[in-house]
Length: 85
Image 1 (tube, helix red, strand yellow):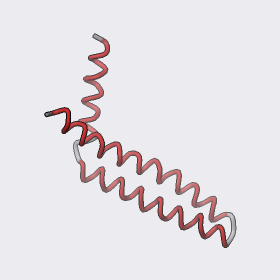
Image 2 (tube, helix red, strand yellow):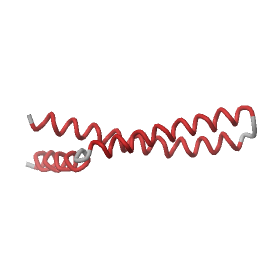
Image 3 (tube, helix red, strand yellow):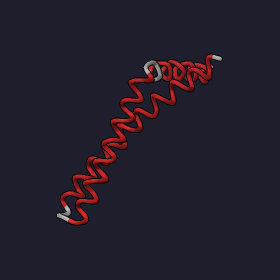
């Protein structure tokens, strides 16, 4: 009984996250762009001051979080469509 309640809760959350796939894709691409900016700062720090690398690592942390949120939204949309069949 308890397992089915958890399963229903997860289905509702997946439907909520996957409701707008275009928004999830935009969030994912924003995270990807932040990732590229972070890589640029890390590479710049190799030739310049090490502070650029630290800035790049901070941006990289944000980029990973943003990418993960967008990817979870995209995955939720696909799983919701799969489970509706």
